[in-house]
Amino acid sequence: MKYFEAQHGDIRVPDRWDDDPERLVQVSWKGKSVTGLCQSSRRCYVYPVMTPAGVCVTNERPTSDHAFHQSITVGNDYFYTYQTSNAGRFEDPGMCFYTNEPDMRGRREGRIVATVHNECTELSETELEFIVRMQWQSPEEGFAPKYRRVVGEEMRTVRVLPGEKANVIDVRSQLRPTDRDIRLGPSRHGYFTVRVTDELRVVDPAGIAQGGRLIDSEGREGEEVCWQHADWVDFYGTDAKGRTAGLAVFQYPSLGNCAWYAGTYGTIRVNPFRKGATFIPRGEEVDLGIRVVAHDGDPEEAGVAKLYEAFQQETAEAAR
Image (cartoon, rainbow, N blue to C red; front, side, top):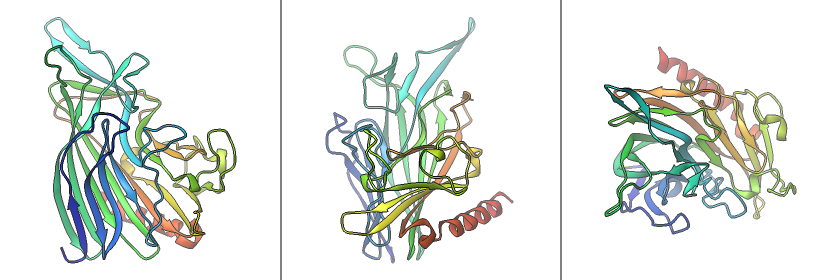
């Protein structure tokens, strides 16, 4: 590669959620770290997410709350598979692909693991794409030895577009069933979850102000943003070195303009399955995507509104 550098690590799944993660992919542009993808015991997640000035704007391991909000994740807390026989169609016990707990209100925890991670292409001086192929594996079954069924296969495509004021990262998830039809939702948690650094969040879990701000494209701020429809949402703040930076999130049209869950404690969820279930028969797939903008300065200085306009034009042209 001429402009980018992509380093690929070994594929290994840590035993425990608090074990050190595996750095599967690490991407730099002109010598500066931009992003990557990591494997923990339960999930693959995009990390780090860096601004052009070198400020990391996502939290890999929250310590005060929600330790499973690892930077930018994909997952769902209501996941079902189905068996079909001459007697009819039967729903298997539910699974959860969201937390670090062994059990989520009667739904045992599965895991999402990488199987292939070296498909990486430099498309231009300012664009790189890497693909990671993953398995959604069921909770352990059987006795000796225990095993995990592969209930879904995902292709996650990460598109990296670095710039002077903002680094743009697209995360696309294409999930398909294996040998059984699947259902996602209705789900309170998922599908994309973004966790920002402590400096960017408005309050901590105790409600104590942290100095960050949360706004949306409609001019709402703080708690007013949550469960509203908007073109984009943005957390921003100032770190210990006095650098102002932020993270904006856009939705691809495939998500259908979901209402944003934006918790002032530092998380954004983009979840099209909140109000209803989605069935995915074998042979079909769920294809969803978000764009994250890691920017220096506040949203106005970074031109987030103009970046969204360009995003709209880009997605409209792609749909033609």
